[in-house]
Length: 522
Image (tube, rainbow, N blue to C red):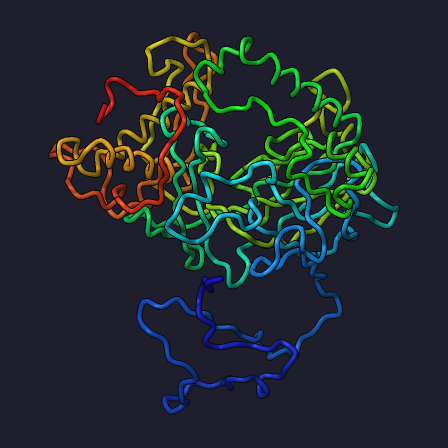
């Protein structure tokens, strides 16, 4: 596998004294101290350092590493500590941690390495989505009074996080409409992929030129194991939705992604230490919930601001809490609209846990028929990119056909995203200069960008009938040109959106494509 990330030019061995390092250190300034390495302009390189005392200051307390993955050589099911891709109370924990202890979890990307760093979108088109998401864990949490108990709150603090060393790249994609789809799958049915490379806190893509932005790295999934009672609640309500939702939910007339729910399935099921094909596995695989949606246990919340310094207060449903995490994102826009829409990557988390005894009853109010119908609380950390100028696009709950919907925030957000895509496409070639095929590619690139860049989605109005109002705010600083409206003509020169070599497959299905009759290129 290709090596990604900076070249190491000054290595440090923390087990050795400063004078024993491979490349000698120095502690004075003088013009005749000889260089120890040479770098080229434009090259991203890495310099490692001892602390200022050269290791003279020590402490006995050290962080314990829990190594879950070796992304470069092993598949998810070959890891030393097995991964899992379902929620079930009987998936055994792979490790135990104590409250107050800082520990490290490493993760494969959510597809388990199925997506490659190349110029083909075939891996996106034909991906087996029965196998996702691959999670690291479960982790059992204990304090001086013993393991976490049902009814407690588990407070998980994110101390540090990032990509795995040597694997500093990621991908954003649009799934084929017949295999995953996405928020705008009726507009963008073709499998499409963009590769991103990381330079410290920044990401850039050869497939989306003219854009560079700092990432707000975060885990897409973090959650506790459900109890059997809660698991049964999930399966019952989601099965009812899948069987009856098509006719009963007005929303599905506008949002075309299918299925309506991903029900338990033995296909692709990975249950950690439970051996596939065993009697226990056969039973659990028919019950275990997919990891696709967020639920009462947290799970796939995709909150882009859960970065360094954040805390997640998760309800505990089983002894030990048995929390798991995965789906690492270098960056994501609010809504992750293309579904595979963050900059997906392998990565690590360094975490610290607390147990708040009896915290569910104390702090979480059930919103449903049982005490289990609760939701986590999230405390956002102090670290995030600073943007001062934004271009904001509004959407209302009127769909592309002109049909009015009543206070439907999803329809409004869809309109806001479509408005932003159409606007940004103006900064590529005009309709008269390119054929429709290339123009659709331009649209798809902007769709990918809005899914993974640090844009802000808001529900701005939800009470003024009949229209819900949603907005999408895009930081203007991520572009290499001024994208604001101006009195003079929009400049020709698609530095932002046009790249004819974007990895893209054909759509081979026969579902109708939604078009806005008044949009550019229609």
